[in-house]
Image (cartoon, chains in turn brown, green):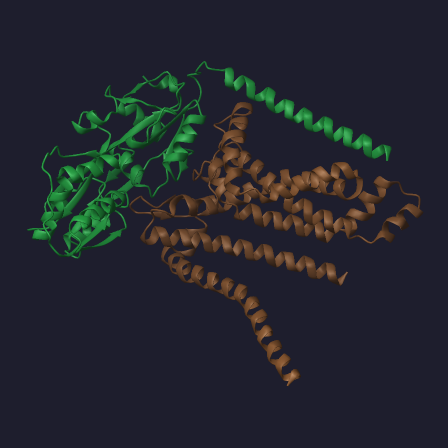
Length: 292
Length: 295
Protein backbone atom coordinates (compact mmCIF):
# COMPACT_ATOMS: atom_id res chain seq x y z
CA UNK A 1 0.00 0.00 0.00
CA UNK A 2 2.73 2.33 1.07
CA UNK A 3 4.64 1.99 -2.19
CA UNK A 4 1.54 2.30 -4.34
CA UNK A 5 0.55 5.45 -2.51
CA UNK A 6 3.90 7.06 -3.12
CA UNK A 7 3.81 5.92 -6.74
CA UNK A 8 0.57 7.80 -7.35
CA UNK A 9 2.02 10.85 -5.65
CA UNK A 10 5.06 10.59 -7.82
CA UNK A 11 3.03 10.31 -11.00
CA UNK A 12 0.89 13.31 -10.06
CA UNK A 13 3.88 15.44 -9.23
CA UNK A 14 5.63 14.37 -12.42
CA UNK A 15 2.59 15.43 -14.41
CA UNK A 16 2.54 18.82 -12.69
CA UNK A 17 6.21 19.42 -13.41
CA UNK A 18 5.77 18.25 -16.99
CA UNK A 19 2.84 20.62 -17.47
CA UNK A 20 4.86 23.53 -16.12
CA UNK A 21 7.56 22.72 -18.65
CA UNK A 22 4.98 22.40 -21.38
CA UNK A 23 3.44 25.83 -20.75
CA UNK A 24 6.48 27.75 -21.92
CA UNK A 25 6.66 25.60 -25.06
CA UNK A 26 2.97 26.17 -25.72
CA UNK A 27 3.44 29.92 -25.21
CA UNK A 28 6.24 30.06 -27.79
CA UNK A 29 4.24 28.00 -30.28
CA UNK A 30 1.12 30.12 -29.75
CA UNK A 31 3.05 33.35 -30.30
CA UNK A 32 4.69 31.90 -33.44
CA UNK A 33 1.37 30.74 -34.78
CA UNK A 34 -0.35 34.07 -34.08
CA UNK A 35 2.46 36.11 -35.63
CA UNK A 36 2.78 34.04 -38.76
CA UNK A 37 -0.96 33.57 -39.31
CA UNK A 38 -1.57 37.32 -39.05
CA UNK A 39 1.69 38.44 -40.64
CA UNK A 40 2.29 36.19 -43.64
CA UNK A 41 -0.97 37.03 -45.50
CA UNK A 42 -0.14 40.74 -45.25
CA UNK A 43 3.40 40.17 -46.52
CA UNK A 44 2.07 38.23 -49.50
CA UNK A 45 -0.55 40.93 -50.16
CA UNK A 46 2.05 43.69 -50.10
CA UNK A 47 4.59 41.49 -51.88
CA UNK A 48 7.72 40.16 -50.17
CA UNK A 49 10.12 42.36 -52.15
CA UNK A 50 7.95 45.45 -51.72
CA UNK A 51 7.82 44.83 -48.00
CA UNK A 52 11.43 43.98 -47.18
CA UNK A 53 13.40 45.86 -49.84
CA UNK A 54 11.38 49.04 -50.12
CA UNK A 55 12.39 52.09 -48.10
CA UNK A 56 9.08 53.93 -48.43
CA UNK A 57 6.67 53.58 -45.51
CA UNK A 58 3.53 55.65 -46.13
CA UNK A 59 0.50 53.73 -44.86
CA UNK A 60 -1.90 56.70 -45.05
CA UNK A 61 -1.11 57.72 -48.61
CA UNK A 62 -3.27 56.62 -51.52
CA UNK A 63 -1.86 54.39 -52.95
CA UNK A 64 -0.25 53.27 -49.70
CA UNK A 65 3.31 52.01 -49.43
CA UNK A 66 4.50 49.51 -46.85
CA UNK A 67 8.28 49.17 -47.09
CA UNK A 68 10.30 48.47 -43.96
CA UNK A 69 13.87 48.48 -45.31
CA UNK A 70 14.59 51.81 -43.60
CA UNK A 71 13.53 50.31 -40.26
CA UNK A 72 15.55 47.12 -40.73
CA UNK A 73 18.61 49.25 -41.40
CA UNK A 74 17.64 51.47 -38.47
CA UNK A 75 17.45 48.52 -36.09
CA UNK A 76 20.85 47.28 -37.28
CA UNK A 77 22.49 50.71 -36.86
CA UNK A 78 21.05 51.36 -33.42
CA UNK A 79 22.01 47.88 -32.21
CA UNK A 80 25.51 48.17 -33.66
CA UNK A 81 25.91 51.52 -31.89
CA UNK A 82 24.77 49.98 -28.62
CA UNK A 83 27.35 47.20 -29.03
CA UNK A 84 30.15 49.67 -29.78
CA UNK A 85 29.32 51.61 -26.63
CA UNK A 86 28.19 48.82 -24.33
CA UNK A 87 30.57 45.93 -25.04
CA UNK A 88 33.95 47.56 -24.25
CA UNK A 89 32.62 49.19 -21.07
CA UNK A 90 30.78 46.05 -20.00
CA UNK A 91 33.68 43.74 -20.71
CA UNK A 92 36.20 45.91 -18.92
CA UNK A 93 33.84 46.23 -15.98
CA UNK A 94 33.45 42.44 -15.87
CA UNK A 95 37.23 41.89 -15.94
CA UNK A 96 37.69 44.48 -13.21
CA UNK A 97 34.98 42.91 -11.03
CA UNK A 98 36.28 39.38 -11.47
CA UNK A 99 40.01 39.96 -11.21
CA UNK A 100 41.09 43.33 -9.84
CA UNK A 101 38.28 44.66 -7.70
CA UNK A 102 38.93 45.19 -3.96
CA UNK A 103 36.17 43.76 -1.78
CA UNK A 104 34.85 47.07 -0.51
CA UNK A 105 34.49 48.45 -4.06
CA UNK A 106 32.85 45.21 -5.20
CA UNK A 107 30.21 45.64 -2.51
CA UNK A 108 29.15 48.90 -4.18
CA UNK A 109 29.64 48.12 -7.88
CA UNK A 110 27.98 44.72 -8.01
CA UNK A 111 24.64 45.82 -6.48
CA UNK A 112 24.72 48.90 -8.72
CA UNK A 113 25.04 46.69 -11.80
CA UNK A 114 22.19 44.49 -10.59
CA UNK A 115 20.05 47.56 -9.95
CA UNK A 116 20.75 48.76 -13.50
CA UNK A 117 19.22 45.52 -14.78
CA UNK A 118 16.07 46.08 -12.76
CA UNK A 119 15.26 49.60 -13.94
CA UNK A 120 12.14 49.54 -16.17
CA UNK A 121 12.80 50.52 -19.77
CA UNK A 122 10.32 53.41 -19.69
CA UNK A 123 12.53 55.01 -17.00
CA UNK A 124 15.51 54.67 -19.34
CA UNK A 125 13.34 56.35 -21.97
CA UNK A 126 12.52 59.30 -19.71
CA UNK A 127 16.17 59.63 -18.74
CA UNK A 128 17.11 59.54 -22.42
CA UNK A 129 14.55 62.14 -23.44
CA UNK A 130 15.38 64.52 -20.56
CA UNK A 131 19.15 64.01 -20.27
CA UNK A 132 20.80 62.25 -23.24
CA UNK A 133 18.83 64.00 -26.00
CA UNK A 134 19.63 67.55 -24.72
CA UNK A 135 23.25 66.49 -24.16
CA UNK A 136 23.58 65.30 -27.77
CA UNK A 137 21.76 68.41 -28.99
CA UNK A 138 24.07 70.78 -27.11
CA UNK A 139 27.33 69.04 -28.04
CA UNK A 140 26.67 67.98 -31.61
CA UNK A 141 24.50 69.13 -34.50
CA UNK A 142 20.83 68.30 -34.92
CA UNK A 143 17.96 68.13 -32.47
CA UNK A 144 19.27 65.28 -30.35
CA UNK A 145 16.73 62.65 -31.37
CA UNK A 146 19.13 60.39 -33.17
CA UNK A 147 20.87 57.07 -33.69
CA UNK A 148 23.55 58.30 -31.28
CA UNK A 149 21.09 58.97 -28.44
CA UNK A 150 19.42 55.60 -28.97
CA UNK A 151 22.78 53.84 -29.04
CA UNK A 152 23.89 55.51 -25.80
CA UNK A 153 20.67 54.54 -23.99
CA UNK A 154 20.79 50.98 -25.34
CA UNK A 155 24.50 50.74 -24.57
CA UNK A 156 23.70 51.49 -20.92
CA UNK A 157 20.76 49.09 -20.95
CA UNK A 158 22.80 46.10 -22.16
CA UNK A 159 25.59 46.69 -19.60
CA UNK A 160 24.12 44.47 -16.86
CA UNK A 161 23.62 41.55 -19.27
CA UNK A 162 27.19 41.77 -20.54
CA UNK A 163 28.75 42.40 -17.14
CA UNK A 164 27.07 39.64 -15.16
CA UNK A 165 27.43 36.87 -17.77
CA UNK A 166 31.02 37.81 -18.67
CA UNK A 167 31.98 38.10 -15.01
CA UNK A 168 30.65 34.67 -14.10
CA UNK A 169 32.29 33.08 -17.14
CA UNK A 170 35.64 34.70 -16.22
CA UNK A 171 35.25 33.44 -12.67
CA UNK A 172 34.46 29.95 -14.01
CA UNK A 173 37.88 29.63 -15.69
CA UNK A 174 39.71 26.87 -13.72
CA UNK A 175 42.23 28.12 -11.18
CA UNK A 176 45.06 26.00 -12.64
CA UNK A 177 45.03 28.05 -15.88
CA UNK A 178 46.12 31.08 -13.89
CA UNK A 179 48.56 29.05 -11.81
CA UNK A 180 50.14 27.66 -14.96
CA UNK A 181 50.51 31.15 -16.35
CA UNK A 182 52.06 32.50 -13.15
CA UNK A 183 54.35 29.47 -13.12
CA UNK A 184 55.68 30.49 -16.51
CA UNK A 185 56.55 33.89 -15.09
CA UNK A 186 53.63 35.92 -16.46
CA UNK A 187 52.41 38.97 -14.57
CA UNK A 188 48.85 39.32 -13.30
CA UNK A 189 47.87 41.53 -16.27
CA UNK A 190 49.34 39.14 -18.83
CA UNK A 191 47.57 36.22 -17.14
CA UNK A 192 44.18 37.98 -17.16
CA UNK A 193 44.27 39.31 -20.72
CA UNK A 194 46.15 36.48 -22.45
CA UNK A 195 44.97 33.39 -20.53
CA UNK A 196 41.81 33.93 -18.51
CA UNK A 197 39.75 36.18 -20.81
CA UNK A 198 40.50 34.06 -23.94
CA UNK A 199 39.52 30.96 -21.94
CA UNK A 200 36.19 32.63 -21.08
CA UNK A 201 35.59 33.54 -24.74
CA UNK A 202 32.37 31.62 -25.26
CA UNK A 203 30.77 33.11 -22.15
CA UNK A 204 31.75 36.60 -23.29
CA UNK A 205 30.32 35.95 -26.76
CA UNK A 206 27.10 34.66 -25.19
CA UNK A 207 26.80 37.85 -23.18
CA UNK A 208 27.30 39.96 -26.28
CA UNK A 209 24.65 38.07 -28.24
CA UNK A 210 22.17 38.31 -25.38
CA UNK A 211 22.99 42.02 -25.29
CA UNK A 212 22.26 42.29 -29.02
CA UNK A 213 18.96 40.50 -28.43
CA UNK A 214 18.02 42.97 -25.73
CA UNK A 215 19.00 45.95 -27.92
CA UNK A 216 17.13 44.72 -31.02
CA UNK A 217 13.95 44.08 -29.06
CA UNK A 218 13.99 47.18 -26.86
CA UNK A 219 11.02 49.42 -27.57
CA UNK A 220 9.81 51.80 -24.89
CA UNK A 221 13.17 53.46 -24.29
CA UNK A 222 14.04 53.79 -27.98
CA UNK A 223 10.68 55.23 -28.98
CA UNK A 224 11.36 58.24 -26.75
CA UNK A 225 14.84 59.08 -28.02
CA UNK A 226 14.99 57.91 -31.65
CA UNK A 227 12.55 60.46 -33.12
CA UNK A 228 10.82 57.75 -35.17
CA UNK A 229 11.23 59.37 -38.58
CA UNK A 230 11.25 56.99 -41.51
CA UNK A 231 14.47 58.06 -43.25
CA UNK A 232 15.30 57.30 -46.87
CA UNK A 233 18.47 55.18 -46.88
CA UNK A 234 20.69 57.90 -48.36
CA UNK A 235 19.74 60.37 -45.62
CA UNK A 236 20.40 58.18 -42.60
CA UNK A 237 22.99 59.72 -40.30
CA UNK A 238 24.26 59.15 -36.80
CA UNK A 239 22.85 62.50 -35.64
CA UNK A 240 19.59 62.13 -37.58
CA UNK A 241 16.37 60.59 -36.26
CA UNK A 242 15.67 56.96 -37.06
CA UNK A 243 12.83 54.46 -36.84
CA UNK A 244 13.46 50.87 -35.77
CA UNK A 245 11.29 47.79 -36.28
CA UNK A 246 10.03 47.87 -32.70
CA UNK A 247 9.22 51.57 -32.61
CA UNK A 248 7.35 51.27 -35.90
CA UNK A 249 4.98 48.81 -34.27
CA UNK A 250 4.50 50.72 -31.06
CA UNK A 251 3.99 54.18 -32.57
CA UNK A 252 1.31 53.16 -35.03
CA UNK A 253 -0.43 50.13 -33.54
CA UNK A 254 -2.98 51.99 -31.46
CA UNK A 255 -5.00 53.45 -34.32
CA UNK A 256 -4.07 51.27 -37.27
CA UNK A 257 -6.65 49.18 -39.05
CA UNK A 258 -6.92 46.90 -42.07
CA UNK A 259 -3.78 46.25 -44.11
CA UNK A 260 -1.88 48.88 -42.10
CA UNK A 261 -2.43 46.87 -38.90
CA UNK A 262 -1.46 43.62 -40.63
CA UNK A 263 1.68 45.27 -41.99
CA UNK A 264 2.66 46.22 -38.44
CA UNK A 265 2.20 42.60 -37.33
CA UNK A 266 4.34 41.57 -40.30
CA UNK A 267 6.99 43.96 -38.98
CA UNK A 268 6.80 41.84 -35.83
CA UNK A 269 7.39 38.72 -37.93
CA UNK A 270 10.61 40.21 -39.31
CA UNK A 271 11.70 41.11 -35.79
CA UNK A 272 10.91 37.57 -34.67
CA UNK A 273 13.05 36.13 -37.47
CA UNK A 274 15.90 38.42 -36.28
CA UNK A 275 15.61 37.04 -32.75
CA UNK A 276 15.46 33.43 -33.98
CA UNK A 277 18.66 34.02 -35.95
CA UNK A 278 20.36 35.45 -32.85
CA UNK A 279 19.29 32.50 -30.71
CA UNK A 280 20.46 30.01 -33.31
CA UNK A 281 23.90 31.59 -33.40
CA UNK A 282 23.88 31.50 -29.61
CA UNK A 283 23.28 27.76 -29.48
CA UNK A 284 25.89 27.24 -32.22
CA UNK A 285 28.47 29.01 -30.09
CA UNK A 286 27.48 27.00 -27.03
CA UNK A 287 27.71 23.65 -28.78
CA UNK A 288 31.07 24.61 -30.27
CA UNK A 289 32.34 25.59 -26.82
CA UNK A 290 31.20 22.25 -25.42
CA UNK A 291 33.05 20.34 -28.11
CA UNK A 292 36.25 22.15 -27.24
CA UNK B 1 47.14 44.88 -3.10
CA UNK B 2 48.80 48.23 -3.76
CA UNK B 3 47.94 47.90 -7.42
CA UNK B 4 44.27 47.44 -6.57
CA UNK B 5 44.28 50.65 -4.60
CA UNK B 6 45.85 52.53 -7.48
CA UNK B 7 43.28 51.11 -9.88
CA UNK B 8 40.33 52.05 -7.70
CA UNK B 9 41.75 55.54 -7.28
CA UNK B 10 41.93 55.89 -11.06
CA UNK B 11 38.34 54.67 -11.36
CA UNK B 12 37.20 57.17 -8.75
CA UNK B 13 38.95 60.06 -10.50
CA UNK B 14 37.46 59.03 -13.86
CA UNK B 15 33.93 58.84 -12.47
CA UNK B 16 34.14 62.22 -10.77
CA UNK B 17 35.66 63.77 -13.90
CA UNK B 18 32.77 62.41 -15.95
CA UNK B 19 30.26 63.76 -13.47
CA UNK B 20 31.90 67.19 -13.51
CA UNK B 21 32.02 67.22 -17.30
CA UNK B 22 28.31 66.41 -17.34
CA UNK B 23 27.56 69.36 -15.06
CA UNK B 24 29.77 71.70 -17.01
CA UNK B 25 28.00 70.84 -20.23
CA UNK B 26 24.55 71.31 -18.80
CA UNK B 27 25.11 74.78 -17.39
CA UNK B 28 25.41 76.80 -20.60
CA UNK B 29 22.22 75.27 -22.00
CA UNK B 30 20.28 76.52 -18.98
CA UNK B 31 21.69 80.01 -19.17
CA UNK B 32 21.43 80.40 -22.93
CA UNK B 33 18.05 82.13 -23.09
CA UNK B 34 18.90 83.98 -26.29
CA UNK B 35 16.98 82.39 -29.11
CA UNK B 36 19.12 81.71 -32.18
CA UNK B 37 16.84 82.27 -35.19
CA UNK B 38 19.43 80.73 -37.49
CA UNK B 39 19.03 77.27 -35.97
CA UNK B 40 17.13 74.47 -37.68
CA UNK B 41 13.49 74.05 -36.75
CA UNK B 42 12.71 70.75 -35.02
CA UNK B 43 9.48 69.59 -36.64
CA UNK B 44 7.38 67.36 -34.38
CA UNK B 45 4.43 65.40 -35.77
CA UNK B 46 2.14 62.61 -34.64
CA UNK B 47 2.30 59.03 -35.92
CA UNK B 48 0.74 58.22 -39.28
CA UNK B 49 -2.36 56.54 -37.88
CA UNK B 50 -3.32 59.37 -35.54
CA UNK B 51 -6.62 61.19 -36.15
CA UNK B 52 -5.13 64.48 -34.98
CA UNK B 53 -2.41 64.13 -37.61
CA UNK B 54 -4.93 63.28 -40.32
CA UNK B 55 -7.02 66.35 -39.52
CA UNK B 56 -4.09 68.74 -39.05
CA UNK B 57 -2.27 67.63 -42.19
CA UNK B 58 -5.44 67.93 -44.19
CA UNK B 59 -6.37 71.41 -42.89
CA UNK B 60 -2.80 72.64 -43.37
CA UNK B 61 -2.61 71.08 -46.85
CA UNK B 62 0.38 68.95 -45.87
CA UNK B 63 -1.55 66.12 -47.48
CA UNK B 64 -1.72 66.79 -51.20
CA UNK B 65 -4.52 65.27 -53.20
CA UNK B 66 -4.34 64.80 -56.93
CA UNK B 67 -6.97 62.82 -58.76
CA UNK B 68 -6.91 59.44 -57.03
CA UNK B 69 -3.63 59.85 -55.17
CA UNK B 70 -3.14 61.28 -51.72
CA UNK B 71 0.38 62.02 -50.54
CA UNK B 72 1.48 63.17 -47.09
CA UNK B 73 4.35 65.59 -47.74
CA UNK B 74 5.65 65.67 -44.15
CA UNK B 75 9.32 66.66 -44.26
CA UNK B 76 11.86 63.84 -44.02
CA UNK B 77 13.37 63.78 -40.54
CA UNK B 78 10.32 65.14 -38.74
CA UNK B 79 10.01 63.51 -35.33
CA UNK B 80 6.96 61.31 -34.96
CA UNK B 81 5.49 60.46 -31.57
CA UNK B 82 2.59 58.24 -30.65
CA UNK B 83 1.01 60.49 -28.07
CA UNK B 84 0.16 64.09 -27.20
CA UNK B 85 2.27 63.89 -24.03
CA UNK B 86 5.42 63.01 -25.96
CA UNK B 87 4.83 65.84 -28.46
CA UNK B 88 4.55 68.26 -25.53
CA UNK B 89 7.71 66.90 -23.86
CA UNK B 90 9.65 67.12 -27.13
CA UNK B 91 8.63 70.75 -27.80
CA UNK B 92 9.15 71.68 -24.15
CA UNK B 93 12.69 70.31 -24.28
CA UNK B 94 13.73 71.73 -27.64
CA UNK B 95 13.91 75.52 -28.01
CA UNK B 96 13.49 75.29 -31.77
CA UNK B 97 10.61 72.81 -31.79
CA UNK B 98 7.14 73.08 -33.26
CA UNK B 99 4.28 70.63 -32.82
CA UNK B 100 0.50 70.30 -32.76
CA UNK B 101 -1.85 68.94 -30.13
CA UNK B 102 -5.52 68.95 -29.24
CA UNK B 103 -6.54 72.32 -27.75
CA UNK B 104 -7.69 70.64 -24.53
CA UNK B 105 -4.11 69.47 -23.82
CA UNK B 106 -2.45 72.91 -23.98
CA UNK B 107 -0.63 73.83 -20.75
CA UNK B 108 1.97 76.38 -19.69
CA UNK B 109 4.76 73.88 -20.42
CA UNK B 110 4.60 75.05 -24.03
CA UNK B 111 3.23 78.04 -25.93
CA UNK B 112 0.22 77.79 -28.23
CA UNK B 113 0.69 80.32 -31.04
CA UNK B 114 -1.94 82.30 -32.90
CA UNK B 115 -2.63 81.21 -36.44
CA UNK B 116 -3.16 84.04 -38.94
CA UNK B 117 -3.51 86.41 -35.99
CA UNK B 118 -6.24 84.49 -34.20
CA UNK B 119 -5.55 83.10 -30.75
CA UNK B 120 -6.43 79.46 -30.13
CA UNK B 121 -9.13 79.89 -27.50
CA UNK B 122 -12.36 78.05 -26.88
CA UNK B 123 -14.37 81.13 -27.96
CA UNK B 124 -12.45 81.56 -31.21
CA UNK B 125 -12.89 77.90 -32.07
CA UNK B 126 -16.60 78.06 -31.28
CA UNK B 127 -17.29 81.08 -33.48
CA UNK B 128 -15.13 79.65 -36.26
CA UNK B 129 -12.51 82.41 -36.42
CA UNK B 130 -9.72 80.01 -35.37
CA UNK B 131 -9.39 77.91 -38.48
CA UNK B 132 -7.42 74.92 -37.26
CA UNK B 133 -10.25 72.84 -35.90
CA UNK B 134 -12.10 69.72 -36.78
CA UNK B 135 -15.70 68.76 -36.12
CA UNK B 136 -16.75 65.64 -34.28
CA UNK B 137 -19.73 64.50 -36.31
CA UNK B 138 -22.54 62.05 -35.82
CA UNK B 139 -24.05 60.97 -39.13
CA UNK B 140 -27.27 59.11 -39.85
CA UNK B 141 -29.00 58.06 -43.03
CA UNK B 142 -32.54 58.88 -44.10
CA UNK B 143 -35.31 59.29 -41.54
CA UNK B 144 -34.03 58.55 -38.06
CA UNK B 145 -35.93 56.17 -35.78
CA UNK B 146 -37.59 57.70 -32.71
CA UNK B 147 -34.94 56.12 -30.51
CA UNK B 148 -32.01 57.56 -32.48
CA UNK B 149 -33.75 60.95 -32.55
CA UNK B 150 -34.16 60.79 -28.79
CA UNK B 151 -30.48 60.01 -28.26
CA UNK B 152 -29.39 62.83 -30.58
CA UNK B 153 -31.71 65.15 -28.65
CA UNK B 154 -29.91 64.08 -25.48
CA UNK B 155 -26.47 64.85 -26.92
CA UNK B 156 -27.64 68.36 -27.74
CA UNK B 157 -29.31 68.99 -24.36
CA UNK B 158 -27.73 70.79 -21.42
CA UNK B 159 -26.76 67.44 -19.87
CA UNK B 160 -25.10 66.29 -23.08
CA UNK B 161 -23.23 69.59 -23.45
CA UNK B 162 -22.07 69.38 -19.82
CA UNK B 163 -20.43 66.03 -20.61
CA UNK B 164 -18.83 67.50 -23.74
CA UNK B 165 -17.38 70.36 -21.68
CA UNK B 166 -16.18 67.93 -19.03
CA UNK B 167 -14.27 65.99 -21.69
CA UNK B 168 -12.63 69.30 -22.72
CA UNK B 169 -14.21 69.43 -26.13
CA UNK B 170 -16.04 72.46 -27.38
CA UNK B 171 -19.81 72.13 -27.56
CA UNK B 172 -21.21 72.96 -30.97
CA UNK B 173 -24.75 73.87 -30.01
CA UNK B 174 -25.79 76.46 -27.49
CA UNK B 175 -28.96 74.88 -26.23
CA UNK B 176 -30.59 75.53 -22.89
CA UNK B 177 -33.04 72.70 -23.34
CA UNK B 178 -32.99 70.08 -20.66
CA UNK B 179 -33.44 66.46 -21.59
CA UNK B 180 -36.10 64.40 -19.82
CA UNK B 181 -36.04 60.61 -19.90
CA UNK B 182 -38.26 59.14 -22.57
CA UNK B 183 -38.30 55.60 -21.21
CA UNK B 184 -37.68 54.12 -24.65
CA UNK B 185 -36.13 50.75 -25.28
CA UNK B 186 -34.17 49.17 -28.10
CA UNK B 187 -30.68 48.96 -29.54
CA UNK B 188 -28.59 51.72 -31.10
CA UNK B 189 -25.62 50.59 -33.17
CA UNK B 190 -22.75 53.07 -33.37
CA UNK B 191 -19.50 52.84 -35.36
CA UNK B 192 -16.60 55.08 -36.34
CA UNK B 193 -13.84 57.37 -35.12
CA UNK B 194 -11.60 56.39 -32.23
CA UNK B 195 -11.23 60.07 -31.29
CA UNK B 196 -14.97 60.52 -30.86
CA UNK B 197 -15.46 57.19 -29.11
CA UNK B 198 -14.41 58.29 -25.57
CA UNK B 199 -16.87 61.18 -25.63
CA UNK B 200 -19.53 58.93 -27.13
CA UNK B 201 -19.00 56.38 -24.37
CA UNK B 202 -19.56 58.98 -21.66
CA UNK B 203 -22.72 60.21 -23.43
CA UNK B 204 -24.03 56.67 -23.72
CA UNK B 205 -23.41 55.98 -20.04
CA UNK B 206 -25.33 59.08 -19.00
CA UNK B 207 -28.14 58.29 -21.44
CA UNK B 208 -28.45 54.76 -20.14
CA UNK B 209 -28.80 56.03 -16.60
CA UNK B 210 -31.92 57.87 -17.70
CA UNK B 211 -33.15 55.17 -20.10
CA UNK B 212 -31.95 51.84 -18.71
CA UNK B 213 -33.70 49.77 -21.38
CA UNK B 214 -31.62 51.11 -24.24
CA UNK B 215 -28.65 49.01 -25.36
CA UNK B 216 -25.65 50.39 -27.30
CA UNK B 217 -23.40 48.44 -29.61
CA UNK B 218 -20.28 50.46 -30.35
CA UNK B 219 -17.38 49.76 -32.70
CA UNK B 220 -14.56 52.24 -33.11
CA UNK B 221 -12.38 51.59 -36.14
CA UNK B 222 -11.93 55.01 -37.64
CA UNK B 223 -14.00 57.76 -39.21
CA UNK B 224 -14.16 56.28 -42.70
CA UNK B 225 -15.47 52.98 -41.39
CA UNK B 226 -18.19 54.80 -39.42
CA UNK B 227 -19.31 56.85 -42.40
CA UNK B 228 -19.37 53.77 -44.62
CA UNK B 229 -21.39 51.85 -42.03
CA UNK B 230 -23.92 54.67 -41.79
CA UNK B 231 -24.29 54.89 -45.58
CA UNK B 232 -24.85 51.16 -46.07
CA UNK B 233 -27.23 51.09 -43.10
CA UNK B 234 -25.41 48.44 -41.07
CA UNK B 235 -25.11 50.93 -38.19
CA UNK B 236 -27.58 53.56 -36.96
CA UNK B 237 -25.04 56.27 -36.19
CA UNK B 238 -21.59 56.87 -37.68
CA UNK B 239 -18.94 58.84 -35.76
CA UNK B 240 -16.50 60.98 -37.68
CA UNK B 241 -13.63 63.21 -36.57
CA UNK B 242 -13.24 64.71 -40.03
CA UNK B 243 -15.48 66.73 -42.32
CA UNK B 244 -17.60 64.72 -44.76
CA UNK B 245 -16.60 64.46 -48.39
CA UNK B 246 -19.12 65.79 -50.90
CA UNK B 247 -20.38 62.43 -52.04
CA UNK B 248 -20.79 61.35 -48.42
CA UNK B 249 -22.56 64.51 -47.34
CA UNK B 250 -25.23 64.10 -50.02
CA UNK B 251 -26.31 60.78 -48.53
CA UNK B 252 -26.23 61.54 -44.82
CA UNK B 253 -27.71 63.73 -42.10
CA UNK B 254 -24.93 65.60 -40.34
CA UNK B 255 -25.00 66.43 -36.61
CA UNK B 256 -22.08 68.31 -35.12
CA UNK B 257 -21.43 66.76 -31.72
CA UNK B 258 -18.49 68.92 -30.74
CA UNK B 259 -15.54 70.83 -32.15
CA UNK B 260 -11.95 70.00 -31.34
CA UNK B 261 -9.43 72.77 -31.88
CA UNK B 262 -5.86 71.82 -32.79
CA UNK B 263 -3.25 74.10 -31.27
CA UNK B 264 0.12 74.75 -32.92
CA UNK B 265 2.69 74.75 -30.13
CA UNK B 266 6.25 76.08 -29.83
CA UNK B 267 8.79 76.29 -27.01
CA UNK B 268 8.22 78.93 -24.31
CA UNK B 269 11.49 80.63 -25.28
CA UNK B 270 10.42 81.06 -28.89
CA UNK B 271 9.81 84.80 -29.54
CA UNK B 272 7.16 84.08 -32.18
CA UNK B 273 3.58 84.08 -30.97
CA UNK B 274 1.79 84.37 -34.30
CA UNK B 275 2.33 82.24 -37.39
CA UNK B 276 0.74 82.48 -40.80
CA UNK B 277 -0.88 79.22 -41.83
CA UNK B 278 1.20 79.07 -45.03
CA UNK B 279 4.38 79.33 -42.95
CA UNK B 280 3.20 76.42 -40.82
CA UNK B 281 2.53 74.41 -43.97
CA UNK B 282 5.98 75.30 -45.33
CA UNK B 283 7.64 74.28 -42.08
CA UNK B 284 5.88 70.93 -42.16
CA UNK B 285 6.68 70.18 -45.79
CA UNK B 286 10.29 71.30 -45.39
CA UNK B 287 10.22 74.49 -47.51
CA UNK B 288 11.15 76.46 -44.40
CA UNK B 289 13.86 74.96 -42.20
CA UNK B 290 14.99 77.88 -40.02
CA UNK B 291 13.04 80.21 -37.73
CA UNK B 292 14.45 83.36 -39.40
CA UNK B 293 12.75 82.32 -42.65
CA UNK B 294 9.39 82.65 -40.91
CA UNK B 295 7.80 86.06 -41.37
